[in-house]
View 1 (cartoon, helix red, strand yellow):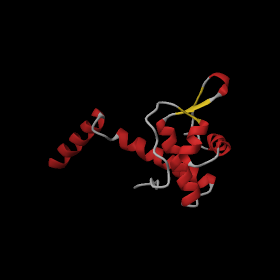
View 2 (cartoon, rainbow, N blue to C red; view 1 turned 90 degrees about the vertical axis):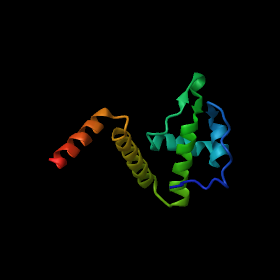
View 3 (cartoon, one colour; view 1 turned 45 degrees about the vertical axis):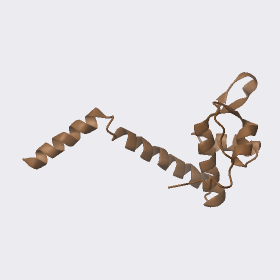
Length: 118
């Protein structure tokens, strides 16, 4: 499911950290909007360094773009977008816990298959 219309948003350069001004330009929102979203969305936590300056990473820019899509394009309220983001986090956590990297999940599947074969 593609959440972002890539034609209208600038390409994210290959950098490790981005200032709030750079993120605002990449996501086409104003810096005060980003600061507000930080207070409203617990997933959005940029690194704060000397002088309390915010530095965003690539994943946080993607998150900002998803939030923007939910609010501006899909018409969610702040509360609705917060719930939607929480649902996405819960489902991705559930997928990771049931992935092949989880040896306990493999054992449970093997035991279920063994019980079914008896």
